[in-house]
Image (cartoon, rainbow, N blue to C red; front, side):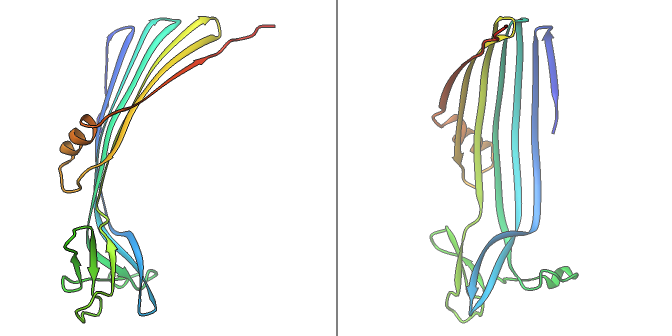
Length: 200
């Protein structure tokens, strides 16, 4: 994560903060199934990558009138591999906590939306799990005009804009940002708030 602050004028301050996070977990929970009367708690190795950019602009027109803007495009993508089921979660030996499926036991279905698991390798499906891969894309922004029309009394005009979508986990992060944010219709919300300080 990097923070960049720029103040071209005393009245204007701009902050930019891009971030990129890589998170990996060998035993991320996926789901559970029943196999011959026994519960199967399924986990997998997740490779999650998150990209975001935060932009803030503060403009002070005068002490009683300010404009603030905040915007953040954000995407998080996770892909799963090395599926396993837990057999001894309290074991102090890492390799004894689980049994990993081999390629003969787990296959992606032809529809591409779930896995079929043949745990006993008898040629028939024992249970299935949905494909847990994901790509979540979101954009949020707020533009706030604040006017202190009397000492202690203010009016706020807020414009909130955003969109949420789901990308293709196989696409790169920048492509999902472009298609799922720039190519989507934005949701717009306008708010007006007024306060009045009553002096007795």
